[in-house]
Image (cartoon, rainbow, N blue to C red):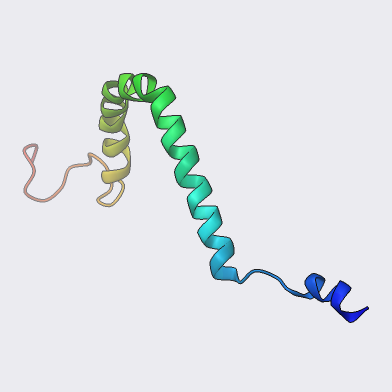
Length: 75
């Protein structure tokens, strides 16, 4: 009787679980890359163009924008 329920108490270790998750994600990523490579690479130029205004917005936030500053051209 104890032998029949003993297998219920055994669980895989957390390391084995995360290894299986990593392998499954790697396989899914490989298959998605193979099927959608053309679409992803085709969007790359648009992503680079989109990065320009996003960098402008986020990188100018630290110094207060385009206001006149000491040492600027419009003194």
